[in-house]
Length: 117
Image 1: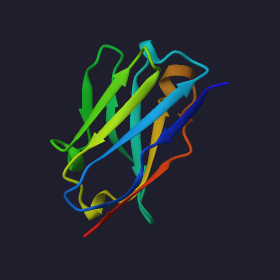
Image 2 (image 1 turned 120 degrees about the vertical axis):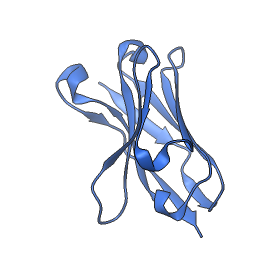
Image 3 (image 1 turned 135 degrees about the vertical axis):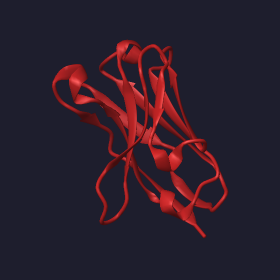
């Protein structure tokens, strides 16, 4: 059974930093693309960052230059370092294994990030 468990969310002031982690069980992530998404109230879920198995990274325009995605295959973990946070970054952040890997998406339960102005 594939499970993704996020942690690291919280309340932070604008300009601050947070690091989110996603621990994956039930599958080895080393050959997989892993992604982070976020969803703010009243808005669609949007891609934040993706990291391919070979390490190539891709970021959504709103977070480029501020967020960095990491993977630790030995720990089966994906992380998201978020710097220079803005109130617009407030959302629930989700770890994801994309549908093209196994024919369906796998999602974590999400972790809340709130950035105060």
